[in-house]
Image 1 (cartoon, rainbow, N blue to C red):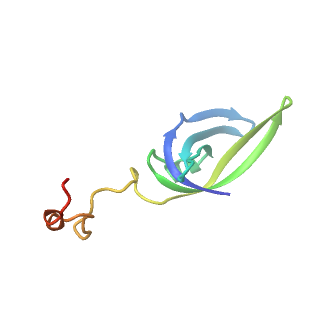
Image 2 (cartoon, rainbow, N blue to C red):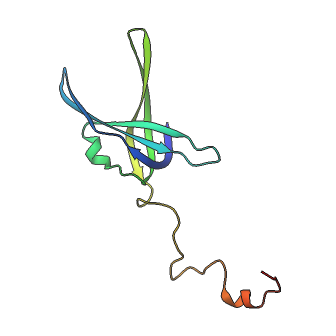
Length: 117
């Protein structure tokens, strides 16, 4: 499953000791684009934390694996990011036109308008 969106929050890094030694997990929130944006909490484990280098504002495309586990009669689901590609620089959005782009309006045309405002 793939998810595209913008990173809106990084949660605190979690670490601990398990049967196989020390582990670390980084969770982050991605907001999907569209008429009805969704917020999705995803996790990265181990060395992928440094490899992906996720920052707030990054536009990302993420490969996700869903996994559910049962513990004491309750089910817990986790969405793990296994692939992450940054689509652009952090901050995203659209800035002012560059020198090669023409602005949407021009002052010449506004001087000859017949509109009263």
